[in-house]
Length: 155
Image (cartoon, rainbow, N blue to C red; front, side, top):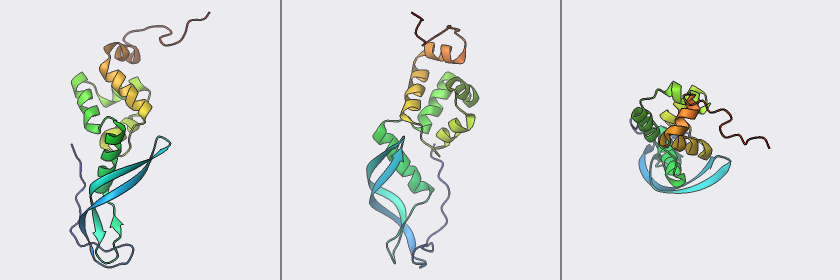
């Protein structure tokens, strides 16, 4: 589900040169994105953005940001919001139950699902393990009370 915000009609006024010459454009773009404490350089061959015909300034809206986020998720092999939503549906789970099991705030999970933030590699790994291994779900939801699970025994 791609929740695109509705764009206002073109032309727009350019914030750089103030000309009313900003129109939709498709451009090759190199994005430098900071995620999980690292900078990633992503080549996006056909970014749909807006560009001022007078000064060349690129204007990024929600749609352009979504494309850059999708490119980062793809580059890193992270689950998409739709994949997380589908896993929740498949398991018949509510967001509240998943966030409690993972020990994260409901708002954090909501932001992953609406695409406003991208989960870290560690949380992506935890999501995959949680969704893929029933025993992990049992332990993390508390339905399988295994005392000291994951904690080495005292020697």
